[in-house]
Figure 1 (cartoon, rainbow, N blue to C red):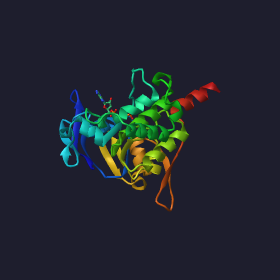
Figure 2: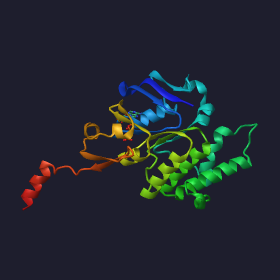
Figure 3: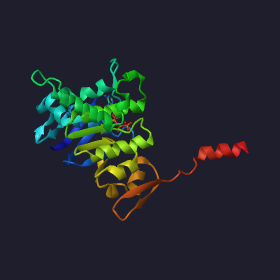
Figure 4: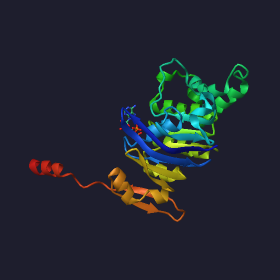
Length: 267
Ligand SMILES: Nc1ncnc2c1ncn2[C@@H]1O[C@H](COP(=O)(O)OP(=O)(O)OP(=O)(O)O)[C@@H](O)[C@H]1O
């Protein structure tokens, strides 16, 4: 199962949002996408999921244009957790996860005990079994986010696209979720903001800037102080360990001149 973007271009109202983006997602890898706000991460995820169509270039799934597969076929192969997916429906936590089974159901394949078992397991994996009967609108942001992931796991698609999956989660659930996703035998593409999470969990990282991929490689290769300064405007130290891992230590910026002036005036 391979997913690839080949030279894709996507614009809105004539303004380019993604330009000449090429990316081969390797089967079984955890590929992180990092980049500043507005750099195009969500747009790229939407194109990889087939929700948007590039004006030029093509997203390919198994060497066939993605959109030629048809909606249900795509959903059986790709599960997408969007950044601000919400529902106004009056549904329970369990029903939200049950939605993940939709691509597998049809006139000849009605809901079965096997579907129940998949949903039970997904609820367990995201630590939401005890909330199964709760109504969606009564749940916290983090609980809803865990259900979105649960729904995607229940979909049992071999490719999982996650747009900022740790949004709203406390640090324990952030790490737990990334570890859970990592442990699945899935191909994962995740837009991440936390560079240390990217360093800890990703096999490769793509760095986006201004609608382009400006770097792609292992965390140790990509997470260089100069690149992080160029892309994010931050100063960091990168600590490396003997196993090839790395850890980003952020340096506090120097005080801004205006602030210095205010402090001086206050004295
Ligand atoms: N439908 C749209 N209409 C107009 N502009 C859009 C649309 N979708 C995205 N953009 C613009 O495209 C750029 C990239 O947006 P995108 O959401 O892909 O960035 P991002 O890297 O995911 O950002 P963030 O980290 O803030 O989530 C932004 O400047 C955004 O305002």
